[in-house]
Amino acid sequence: MSSRDTASLQIFLDRLSARSVLTDEEKSAILALPTRREDIKARRDFVHLKQETVSSCVIVSGLVARFDQTVEGERQIVAFHVPGDMADLHSAVRPIGTGGLSTMCDSTILHVLHTDIFALCARYPAVAEALWRDCMLDAAVLAQWVVNVGRRNAQTRLSHLFCEMASRYGTDREWVLDFPFQVTQGQLADATGLTAVHVNRTMGKLRLDAVVSHRRGKIKIHDWARLARLGEFDADYLVADTKPDRPERHFA
Amino acid sequence: MSSRDTASLQIFLDRLSARSVLTDEEKSAILALPTRREDIKARRDFVHLKQETVSSCVIVSGLVARFDQTVEGERQIVAFHVPGDMADLHSAVRPIGTGGLSTMCDSTILHVLHTDIFALCARYPAVAEALWRDCMLDAAVLAQWVVNVGRRNAQTRLSHLFCEMASRYGTDREWVLDFPFQVTQGQLADATGLTAVHVNRTMGKLRLDAVVSHRRGKIKIHDWARLARLGEFDADYLVADTKPDRPERHFA
DNA sequence: CGTAGACTTGACCTGCGTCAACGTGTGTGG
DNA sequence: CCACACACGTTGACGCAGGTCAAGTCTACG
Image (cartoon, rainbow over all chains, first blue to last red; front, side, top):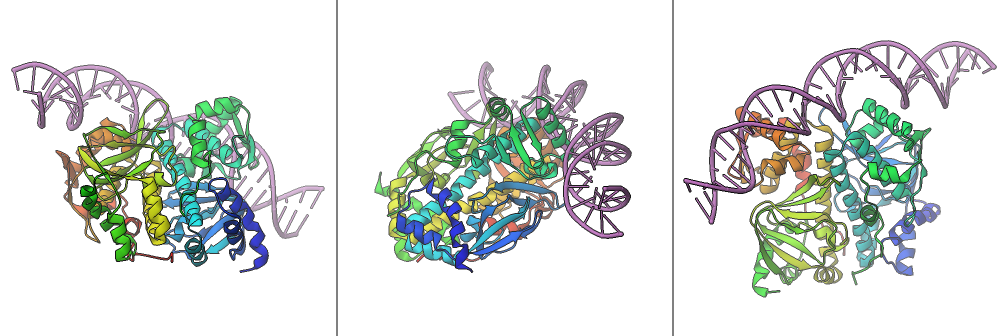
């Protein structure tokens, strides 16, 4: 636990503050959390399935996927986490069977001990509320994923995913039309419940139609309006999912 | 808000207490929450998509589904809620875009105002922790559903769903092999990302193989071992999902 | 005893999976 | 600076799980 890493929690605090109202004292307390920094190479499972955790991870840079798998070992990615996210915050209140975490590309994370989170929550109820809210935003995205894999075809699934990521990389109500997304087509397949081959064909079609392209770990959205339509991406709705208009505070 | 209904919150408190440690004072405070009772006929959408809510619903009897839908109006059920569940507890900290709720059969629910929940959480941090934990158990089941619709075939999806419900109706480490499940095959299709016709065929196969049957709104599991194998149901894992071994308390 | 909603069944179709080969880019060691 | 390897992307041929359409049949309820 090095106090020099403390400054990097700013990215996490920014995320939290966009959704919840925190006092200066609470913000300072969050920034003062002890952390342990870890740099992880691409494609490493750094939290294993069924592993019980004692800390949660803030993503500082890179891209992380939460996954689970069938008994035959086929993977299903259930969430992507971008810098600023606390990928397994949920494990604080429920540390067992939390799913695995895997880096998609070289990433750096900060470990925060659950015990430190508890101490903070006990002292500042509004922080507990903010963390709870953050978890529920992740859960809302998860519910969208069920709809995505359950009821949409390949093109719509992929388009929806890209819209979601554009919205999460963006700030406020601006989409980012050009963002890093260092995943292979095989990983896109694991996220959308498809196969790598079919992802490849579908991406080819989307590129030919000049909607999106994915080259060298970067997404370029050429036609946002069309992508949003293809992906059945309801701007108002999903914005509310990831970035509620008005930050909230209700406890104490 | 009638104080006579208060007693019915017992079923919710029981659920909460199985997962979290609460003091007698905290338990009394939960039971003392003001509620409004509502009896709802089968197949009613009583919380609409995109509706902003001011209260959450405890299911007292019946069966409720949380759903979402594609732009073409195809539904996807993302969760079932049985008596004792607080179906949209998450809406307390995130009241917009929470998904719809629909009764599968005649049900009775208790509305609890978010403001009352906040007051309770502010006064008793451990209650906030317990509610947060409950939300995370729902989220864990949701992640399972992504795997289910994303990576499993029809028979496995249905089997897994029945195992999950058997586990949720059961207490402790006992499965219930015979439980009410008042859903139509069309609704099973909406929950598994299939069509009603294919659900029908698959249920027919499961019945012929003497694994499960679904008649008159009741599930009868004839061969638990086989159902669990077909459904890739990892007992240890999913039990942890819905009923952690050791109730927890960390805040204050 | 009629009607409406759910269940059942059959015939046919298609989106996506599977298998297998080949192209392409990037990093590494000589 | 080349060559080799390895992982990823791309493409084609073919098969199948599950979708679609359509025609009944059952069952609960007024």
